[in-house]
Length: 85
Image (cartoon, rainbow, N blue to C red; front, top):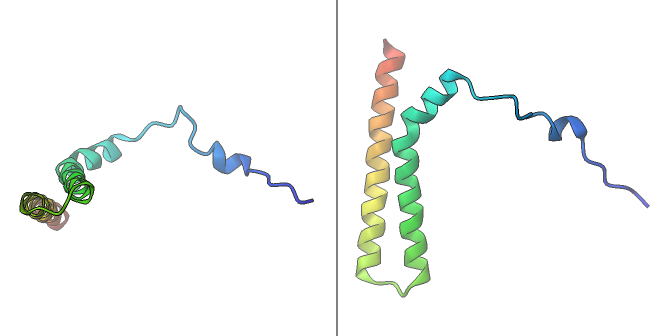
């Protein structure tokens, strides 16, 4: 019989004392509008799946998709300007 053993180093690689760096926190803060827009899009898609397909659900999904894309464009333009500087 073969035993299944976990790799101890992989499991404990991220110890509780390891905190994100300031640069990582800044990157998360910079991307937060896009993250929230993506979450709104997923919520709209879930709501559309849970109910009968109605025009209101389709509009909500399209609106959330446009918002997610717009925030990604803003983020891409902002990071593009930052990289060029």
